[in-house]
Image (cartoon, rainbow, N blue to C red; front, side):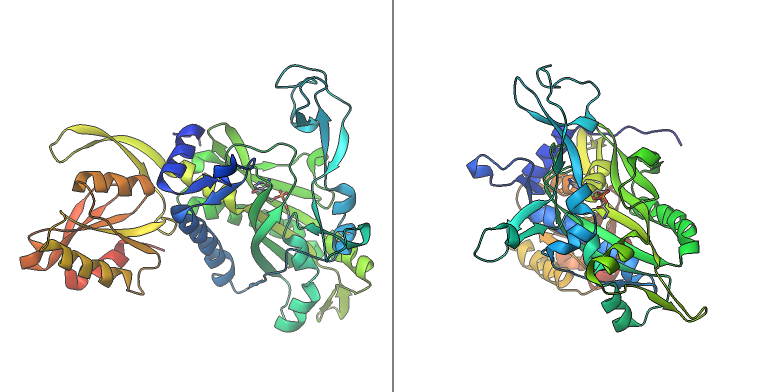
Length: 446
Ligand code: GAP
């Protein structure tokens, strides 16, 4: 498949996100905090929908998966045993002239990208944030903000196994915050220091590791495609041996073609039995599985699909952005901006729009809004909007990706019917108010 470049640049998507309330710079009134972002009223809906879609696909949609929600703060020995205290480092260099700091492995030349100055020798910089547990700030009270959710799953392996009596292969899924004191951040919400992850640790018999690894690469890639991401902007990239993390024998990244080029949105790693063995020796608890068929205790291999929630949000937003020429009510062609988001992800599912603000129309439009909003069949926001012309309101809803608008007009007072307008085709269909919820449901897959 040929590469299809993104249709939008980063400035356009960032300004749409701010203007329409998807994302705001964190602590903006104090000048902002570098590379941290707050999800606004629409962003929070989109992000929830992304996480729900993932949970539906990988937990509720399968019979080999259970969920977990482990604490962010963990015993510091967890991070010693996992290798993070020792190895979760990036090589840091500093410019001797302008004192900007860079990740040496991301530089194409051995000079400062900002001013061309000479760089210091690299030193290893640990990415884990430290904080203190309790009132005394000493070395004994240091704890870490987790840089991945995975370790919370490994240390609960035996608890989950005992509680659920699972047989191999099975997985434990978790969604939660992670923190990394990244040396360089940027590209909006692509690389930040606080972010959210959707991770699965999938436990298999060691000799089935390779097969499950390949299956998970394909299933992970397909999840984005099933939610509408253009497959020409998705690719799988296998890591070179030199790139592998300390725990992995094979890793593949799912990459998306962002406005600045290809970027990792998810990694799938074959972590072997590294983690369960590390925590067995670190804690003294045997994290093994009793195989009834062979009568032996084995240490399962782990296949880990690990996705960033914020990078998924960024992917869906960027991929959905579309500009086209569309006819206005008077037939003139006008630029139309729309987010072609999958309906399962759209922050607003339906907008109810009276043709105009009018004392006869408003009560009926409000009634229609209540009926749709309160229906259990529609999972998500249903907005009411009666400000400005109907054309402008359609454009406003298009720009935030609302799949359906319901228009209540003067004929509705007599025929008790309304018009459903579909976002992408702009096709309109008249339906009786009585059957409106069913008609909406039919048009909103997921
Ligand atoms: N447990 C495996 C693990 O942590 P990773 O490749 O370091 O693997 C997994 O991270 C995913 O988390 C990445 O593919 C990316 O989507 C997301 N991610 C990693 N660092 C990030 C950051 N600084 N900002 C936003 N997302 C990040």
